[in-house]
Amino acid sequence: MTNLELSFSPYKIKLRTPFSTGKGIFTERNGFILTLKDENRISGTGDVSPFPEFGSESIEESEKALEKLKLKIDVDYSSLHNSLNNILNDYKALPALRHGLEQSILNLICKERNIALADLLKIKLKKKVNVNAAIGFMNAEKAAAKAQELINKGIKTIKIKTGRDENAGGFSLDKNVIEVVRKIAGDDIKIRIDSNGRWDLKSAIKNLNETEIFNIEYAEQPVNSIEDFIDLKRQTNVPLAADESIRDIKSAEEFINKSVVDFIILKPMMIGGLIPTLEIIELAEKNNITPVITSSFESAVGKANAVFAAASVQKKIAHGLSVSQYYESDIAVDNYPVKNGTIVL
View 1 (cartoon, rainbow, N blue to C red):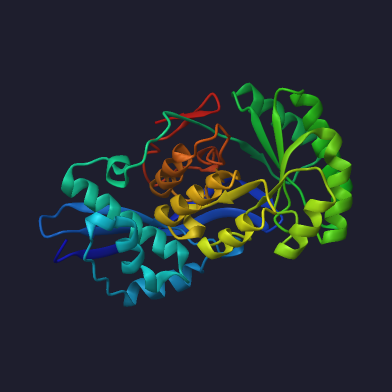
View 2: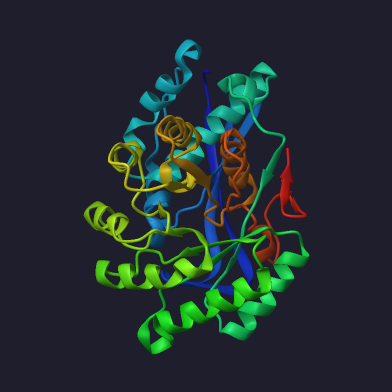
């Protein structure tokens, strides 16, 4: 790979309706599409979609780094993972940018060599990936209607956003929503909750113990520090999942080695690309922790990486990849649409 030309163009994706979480209300997503061309004009593309609220750099930091970027690429195909990690080592603090660079390089290699990504990375993928769908902050009546709508579309796992401020109803409203969704869903639908680290330890213990009766699949990021996760795991029977606490292989190793979670949520855009995500998946599975892959509301270009990672997970589990429903329009064709709660590869 020599005489490479890198260009980038900004994009904006508007959401049909605002999506409310413990991190704020989101109405659009912004990013960049990278295009890497070789001397034969073969090109590879990658998505850079920063989401600072969830642990990445800002859009301004990505753009500034792109304007100064001088990328030297000398790929060792005999040790592809290590080679790309070394090439992209300077961008660890810019995970969304690293994601886009890695994706464009891998895309280009696949086109140059006329090889599928799974074959290049020597990974066996599942043919189908189950997905969950999320219910953001809304009142119990609207949540019940949304749950019924999702179930009618074939969704069998529903994630409910929790962690409201007290002036917005607090956990009392969170609990009401969980209760009505469980009533609508019956016993056959799995329910997850996600608080985005909004609870302190005392509140998390109380709240999760109150939700045990609803048979929660797992509570995602109820607290923030690993110390709080350790204490919480001792005092609740609700399975725990870490999301925002996991942003690189080092933080993943700490949570996995201390066995403080049952599930680990991985967003390739926030982790820094597909390869570090695959490395964490392998480590988690060796330690009987289930990886769940989640979109960061990126474009269809970036979503392809998340789908690939999800299809590599051994256990049959629903992943957070049903996001295109929220967009007014995407910037590219979504090659992995959700039909009847499933993505077919």
